[in-house]
Amino acid sequence: MSRPNILQVRLSDEELEKLKRYAQQKQISAAEVVRDWIKKLK
View 1 (tube, rainbow, N blue to C red):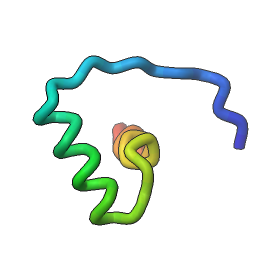
View 2 (view 1 turned 120 degrees about the vertical axis):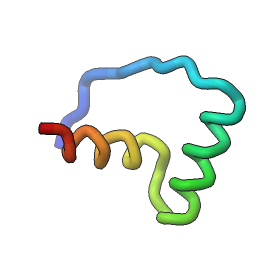
View 3 (view 1 turned 90 degrees about the vertical axis):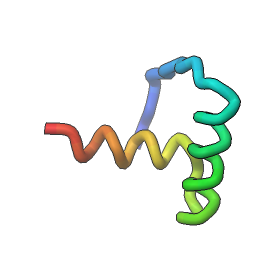
């Protein structure tokens, strides 16, 4: 699937670490964590 759009988000050090830790636990990229979250939005 083509993904031509880029979203830039400012995160605190703590927020970024939480995202990285969660992604690592799930063995997926941080981008995939965000895409999965967006898919769950109604």
